[in-house]
Amino acid sequence: MTVERSTCVDRKCPFHGNLSIRGKILTGKVVSDRMQRTVVVQVDYLRYYSKYKRYARSRSKIHAHNPSCINAVKGDIVKIAECRPLSKTVSFVVIEKDVR
Picture 1 (cartoon, rainbow, N blue to C red):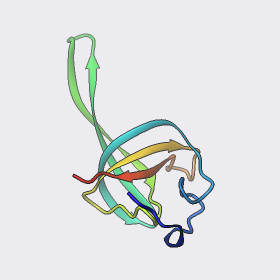
Picture 2 (cartoon, helix red, strand yellow; picture 1 turned 135 degrees about the horizontal axis):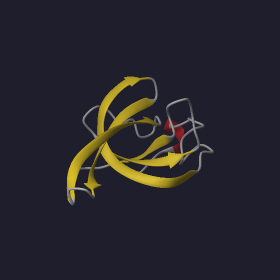
Picture 3 (cartoon, helix red, strand yellow; picture 1 turned 180 degrees about the vertical axis):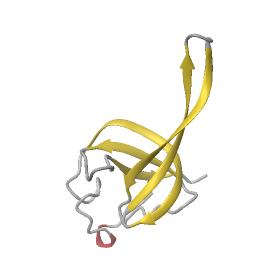
């Protein structure tokens, strides 16, 4: 995926700004893009219950910053990475859109 410098002037972009990523990298589906420069990503995972020795499907919704050079919309499969807290609820940033 090629990203042009002229289209992104976001300081919170990990590629064109000064935001460093560290920690977890997750994959999920964008379920909402109604906020400005922020998306809600639903991450599905398996949770283990030791009492029953079984796994159960779980999901969580994570708010992530959406740089203008990536511009993920509702329904996209995206990869998000952990970064420093950008606001009260946002500590992740979208780093890639999957082409599925």
